[in-house]
Length: 479
Image (cartoon, rainbow, N blue to C red; front, side, top):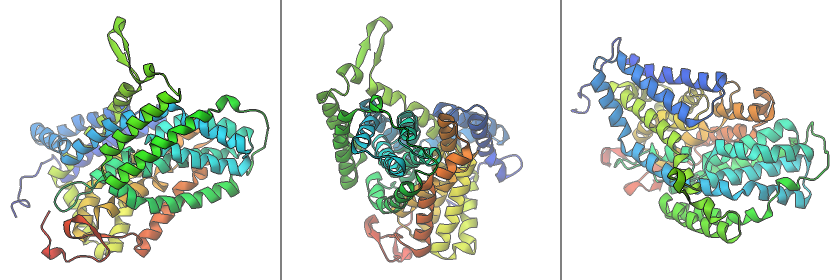
């Protein structure tokens, strides 16, 4: 009862004015992506902090407004995300330095794959690269300059070739244990004791959804990928680097350790050590690329440092979004939204509640222009409260949140950062790029099937273990 009567953050004009920071952030997303064609996280973080600064003016107490924002920023979910991001930044930077994509181009050329089969191969290769690096946007900027020209030479359809690269980038964003969305989705879903879901367990339970959507997309790319393409012949040796394929070894070991131990830090440590030894041993990069010093300018460099600095923009975005969520929580906006969903006719059943959340995740992702990390951090707390009320396991909730955000809502033309990047790097129209991103369609269909049939719907049992049958929540400790 004391929790229900706690003092709320009051806004001039009522509780709904607490949504002003969200509205301002939405405007920034559209302005940055559509008008400025700026796809960096630093600009988004700036938009989030400006939204907070302006939004506070509509609160009756500017001091209490920022107290609420700091409370959201200092939550266990926020701190967990920030710490993990800095750690994975080093491994992601290592994989980018190794040039793994060049190894896949060599492999495809050596086997003689062309046309639709090459487009399917590009999807598979990009899936591996994005899973290894954990960066969808970074994968696209790496893969497009290598795979797209090679695919055109080998008779791939421009539409499905671009779509295969975007699809592969989204696949890794959804599945990789070192992806920002994987970490965000796990960290926002809590057990009843308040601890966030572990990343390794979420990934292990998520594989089935990603695999089904991925296999269907792979077959479709092989069938449709050659439509409109013309085989030109010629050499693509300049894009090839067979030695880089050896970096798959530390990637696989990292994934196995992270998922089996359910400890992302252990997985990154093992992968980083093996990756450094493998890359240096096979001459993929010199030690100076790992760490170097420039005494004349008092600057230290290397991809380990770049990995940390490269995460600063993303961490800034996380801090801004959690600040906004802290304000919404203290204003009672999140609680109001949760109550409205739980009291709706749709949410009378667990299936209906999940479909209501599907709608909520989709709308939030559209609002944030396909920036899935921001949409997951925003809707995550709402899904967390609804899922806990229904007893649904945190793994299931995290998987829903991540998969739905990374499917159709993330590729809507003129509202999607993924589509804008694909269009900018190929010269194709946003509609063409979105139409070729088949994995977004197949993953969305897979999740609709999972929600409708209950496939994969587990509940939180004693000590947090997943159980098939819904436990009696009245005998469980309150969160």
